[in-house]
Image (cartoon, rainbow, N blue to C red):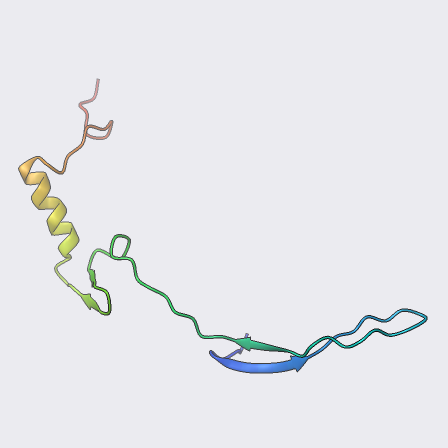
Length: 88
């Protein structure tokens, strides 16, 4: 813990040794916390987030929920499943 984002921390190199001889040192390696790029997926984000290619906007009305409810009113959003079937 305590590492900061996008920082270089340590340079090191290694070599193998046995009782008879030591090998050559490896090329130096740097331990660092690298930056990375990520994308938000509109199909899996929170229902109140409106995600476009380069922007994210909070929609307090929950647009995705309204879309689903509108389809259910039309009868197009419902599917046959045990949860929606009458009890027997």
